[in-house]
Image 1 (cartoon, rainbow, N blue to C red):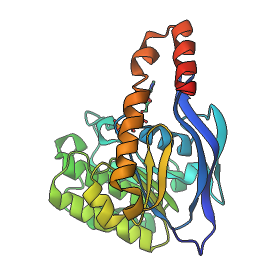
Image 2: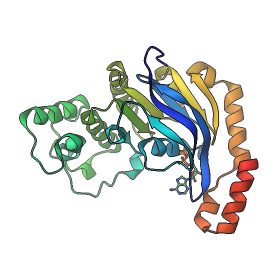
Image 3: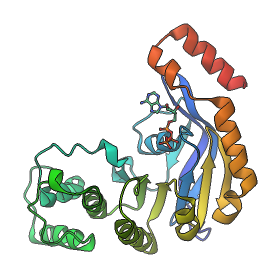
Image 4: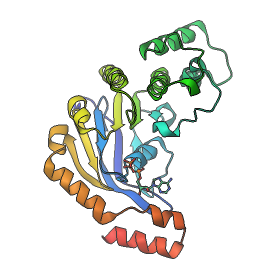
Length: 264
Ligand SMILES: Nc1ncnc2c1ncn2[C@@H]1O[C@H](COP(=O)(O)OP(=O)(O)OP(=O)(O)O)[C@@H](O)[C@H]1O
């Protein structure tokens, strides 16, 4: 955490969830501007939910997420790769250029400087020469490179990455991780949901360990201790997964489950 800078984000007793089921609850704390923060935890721990809460895709059930000196629309948010619809007929150039929509609007032409920025972003992720290739014809790693180029054009002070390296090759991970480091060195705050602890230990000075609640937060070496990881696994097991109840839409059972969860 870069304590020389003030916070860019503050969680105040934040509870987020779906259909009245809390998925992450009672989060408190701040993220300093310029942080490079990993969010880790077992499956279903609420990591993606937290990112959705930060961008405002989910409204808090309780408490709030405060953005300091930043509008929500300015946040660059890379969702999990599985959410990308690759059947959509769009070529790499136009896909990447969408990163400039917030600055230029969707239907206005780009000026020369913007065109150059698009070209540079495509070059920075190693996709030069493929500008006119439909995204559906790219490998998973190339698609992720294109998505990173789009994030780059958004030029945001706060970048949220949800499992950015899920199913991609080692070379692509290396290149994209170098880009993330570069963005951070430019002063941007990066919050990444990650599963690979080795990667987190190497790249992220600070970690938040979630298991529906905050298990630990601080320097990565301290947070990723055997004891904390054991506690997170245990919490995940005893709290179970709410998905079954969420799908059945049985209000009485929902209320019962929520109460049990709350007291459990
Ligand atoms: N759209 C949704 N509707 C209902 N429940 C949801 C929805 N999305 C997630 N959940 C539930 O919220 C809980 C937290 O899910 P979330 O995706 O945030 O976990 P995660 O830590 O990102 O997990 P993973 O590592 O498996 O991606 C889970 O129980 C999940 O089933």
